[in-house]
Image (cartoon, rainbow, N blue to C red):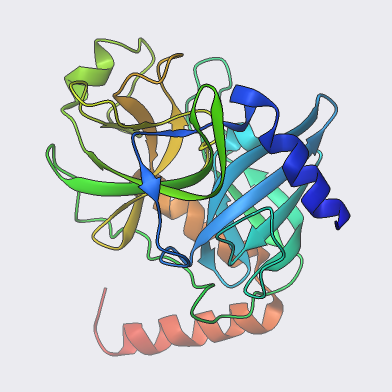
Amino acid sequence: MQPLLLLVTFILLQGDEAGKIIGGREARPHSYPYMAFLLIQSPEGLSACGGFLVREDFVMTAAHCLGGSINVTLGAHNIQRQERTQQHITVLRAVPHPNYNPQIIRNDIMLLQLSRQIRRNRAVQPVALPQASKRLQPGDLCTVAGWGRVSPSRGTNVLQEVQLRVQRDQKCSGRFESFSSETQICVGNPRERKSAFRGDSGGPLVCNNVAQGIVSYGDSNGTPPAVFTRIQSFMPWIKRTMRRLAPRHRRTADSLSRAQTNSRGFP
């Protein structure tokens, strides 16, 4: 068995630290081509998070998934197997939001610049990010995917999915003292045993094929609703950061594209 697979197996056997999706089911293989599995090495040891591809050279995740070194696996369904679709890439630079507050888990978003561009194919593709004008509404149905445990006593090595509904802000502000409707989304019907949980951290909340949220935190026993970072609130920082860190040839192409757009009279 390869060293990376040995490490993944070790993570999956560590109980709740690997996290779980509650009330979900196995996803159809490669139906979420943007999903990323993050293996994180820090002074405290090994841990795992979810993430998602947002450009050929960037993965997005939660800031609390920061570690000393991060290895990204894309194109995976079973993370304990060497699938031909998998692409393993190291992280060149991790960029947590400058205002991330670990005490209250606020501004929980991070960009990971990959050491090389991915090879885009049916199993590995970026997901769209939200537009500034379209805000999620209570009742909207979205999907969360991730690897990890499906119950406190049972793990899984295949990608799981669960459908969750956006809730009114009050459902979270009444439960979580630090909840902010400006930068966070309340997700998951409290009457249903369906939720994302620890270790699914950093994975995307996808609504109508657009990544709207990032798994951030929730109740200690996994009872919904849970709190997701609202990606829409951070789009200026996301665009600015990816533009600043892009290779020079890409920055030049982006500048020409913006100039051509402006010449056509668009804002």
